[in-house]
Image (cartoon, helix red, strand yellow):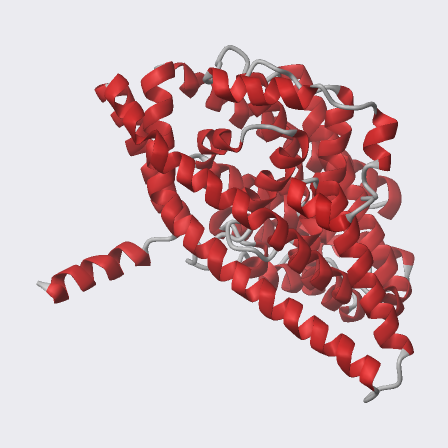
Length: 444
């Protein structure tokens, strides 16, 4: 009997977590529609999942951003590195702005109202200070109070400042000195803390299968099938925003405008990476194909792509950051309290910085969404609405991310005379489409 249970558990665990959560989303929705009001008794299990998500927000932000500051030390970047990082930040900021703009035009989530408790929380969050106060609030008067009160922008600022400060002290200290060793020990502790938090997030996501089932059952028991149309509208909003990001920003502005080459040639050169990203939903898993395309098809020098592409797979999350803005608008609409301009600016800043720190976290989009929702006071329970269709949305986001990595890499190579326009797709040559990896583990 015990062997049967163990084998059943192992088969269950062999299914990627995102698909188990998607199945829980569907089953919970069906149960809510079929059973009706009694399904609302499952709400406490969903509330527990929400509390677990809230529990990991601050430590995840602190540990991962301190580590990000260590990785992105200005002294170590150099000219090419500085250009790459600035372009990644710029394209991410534009992506969030596009997501917010398209969301304001389409208004996903309108027509579906969640329960009064969520609406009350959104009303309280809407009574926010002006833009000047929001910007000043980025710098916390007391970082520990900011952590205790969940003021995410203040926590982000302090974590980055502390991480950069540690890096500067380490670089100025004599190697082997007490100060140098102390900083290294601090980084080791932070790295260990980040790994611990990754394990905790993994546990939270495992429970999320139950939590999402409970939340969706309770939600559909109250709202009925109206939520389905809202999710279709959410999907369409993201698809339009990603199309605009790829077409306008990557192809027309970067490839055509700044690189001065044909966008069609660029797409031919990066098609393998784009198809792979769409298939396996992982920027890191796509990295070998992306680097091969940059080298063989686009003619980029190894000195550029060997730095820009691995870094992009880690911190360049244009699609995911864009989705955070869309999800924030969607959630604000389903609670009947649209975000103010000030709150949307806060979403942009929070999503931009958080996308750098949490890229390597399992279930990154969910963790980042929790951070953004907390900053603007949106109900975290609403994450259950979108988590079930996340595997489908994630494919589009990952393809967007990989396309952005290649576009930025091509531009930086052009600026530094590190690209050969007489070879590859630029000369009319194309590589045959390689076999697409069968892995389906997503990390974006």
